[in-house]
Image (cartoon, rainbow, N blue to C red; front, top):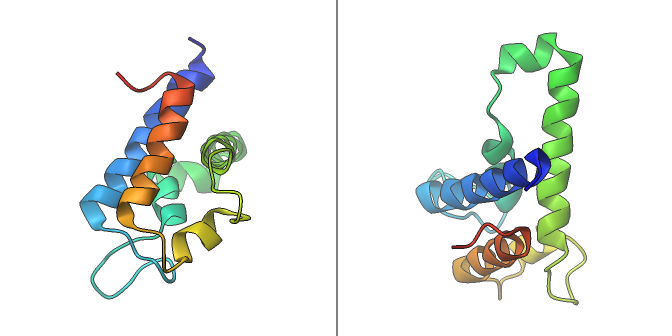
Length: 115
C-alpha cells in the first residue's frame, strides 16, 4: 500500500468522524448548532498541519491541497449520477446523513480501508 493510499484512507476516516462528531449541515458550511458540511469535514480530515505551518510553508499548503483533492476525487467517484458534485449531493434535501456516510464508506472500500 502506498503512502498516498494510506493518507487517503486516514483522511476519509477522519472526514467521516468529523461528520459524526459535529453532525452534518445540509445547507451552508456550518449551522448555528455547529453541524458542518461535507467539504468542511473533508478540510478538517486533512488538517494535520497547524495554520502557522500552512501560512509559512508553501510545500505544506500544496501537500494539504493535494490531500484534499484526493479525498474529493475519491468521494466524487461514487456520487449518484444525478449529482454533479459534493455540494449538490450534500445540499440535496433527499440526501440523508446515512447517504453521506455510505458515500464515504464506498470510497474507503475502494481504497482498501474497510475491514
